Image 1: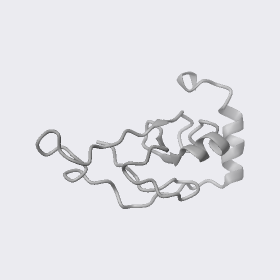
Image 2: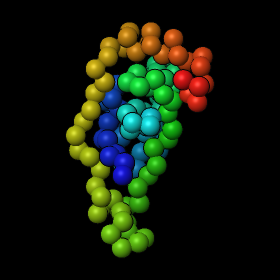
Image 3: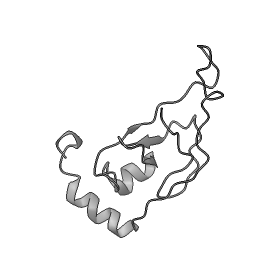
Image 4: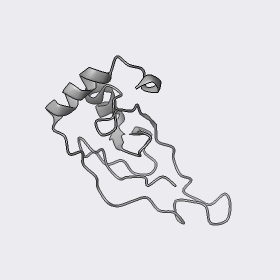
Length: 102
């Protein structure tokens, strides 16, 4: 089940469970769409993969026991360990390779 991290790991923007601009990689690294497009260039600084829009967990149960109420989002804020310069260098080295080929 997705962890639903509460913030962009780069700019620390709040990304609540209903955020439509939250992006994740296959390891659930979480960044806002603005950082993904303008700084990361669709290259996860942690794994090198690409990003997809994070799905929105239903806030009310459509099925018994399955909702944001029953499986709440994480409250633990996560931050990338890389500097913005390191991230830009890494993105520049991989952005020309399609995520499926990285």
